[in-house]
Image (cartoon, rainbow, N blue to C red; front, side, top):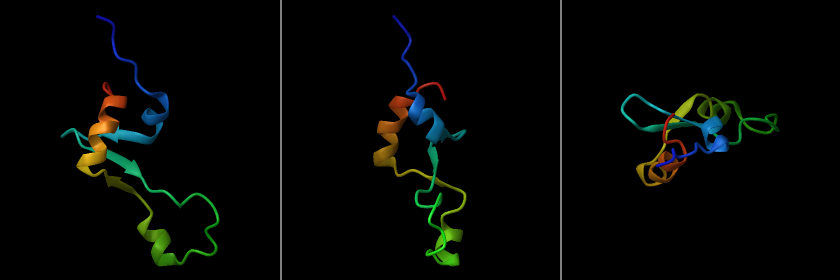
Length: 65
């Protein structure tokens, strides 16, 4: 049986934690930051744990990560 291939676009955006949850970065924090207030930009920093309903789909795209 051949191996499953990792989706290269998903591999760049998502990582699995040690417990198998999916973590991801936030959107809307790459450009046009002058009109966004400091509180909003601060909330977009760091990583977030993905909701379980979306994580099931993403987990299929990154089986070995």
